[in-house]
Amino acid sequence: MRFYLLVGFAFLVIQIIHAQNGIHLEYKMSSMQTKGKSIAKIDILPATGTRSEMEFVMPQLNKAMHMVMIYRKDKPNTSIQVNDQNKTYTEFTRDAQNKQSSMKPTVKVIGKEKIGTYNCIHSQVNMNTTTYELWTTKDIDGYTELLNQSYFDNQGDMKNMFTELKKNNADGFMVKMQSDSKSAMSMELIKVEEKTLDTSLFSPPADYKKLDKGAFTQQQIQDMIKGQ
Image (cartoon, rainbow, N blue to C red; front, side, top):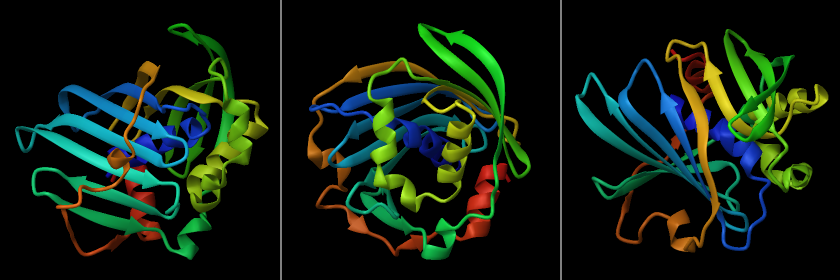
């Protein structure tokens, strides 16, 4: 679940993009818990939601893993995990008390840096015992629309982090991120393109079976962030 949390972090700053046909992004990823090539693919249809796909190899299982998570705009407090292999899906919810996070992030701006073709602000974000190195940019059109997104009202910890980044003029589109948690994870943007997206991508296939619903407790969320 650490993968989804970190991609969810990227999701916070890419929800703002407005494109008639949708946006497709790809991040290269690395982690001490995986080996070989790891890719996160994120498809965004502004009026519908976001779909993230992770492809990576878990050494302890010695096999490739493919994970899918869907976030729908009409269900802002719910995430849907899809298992294509078993043709099942599970809905996870965050209750009201989880929206009010006790995590108080702090932000330190390191300076301006260039990542690829993007002019970025490099900042250090501390959330409890985890430190993130983050590079954000406003070179990509549409960022100011973020202020109008109701999605953040249901995101607790991530909303707090965004607020602190903005206070320090370090908010923007996430280009790169590194974590010092036990997973030692990093992500870097490698592709951004407009793309025609079918709305069916943002719902489980009709023939998939729904499993018992799940709910993230506040402690589980904090444990995932810490990399435990």
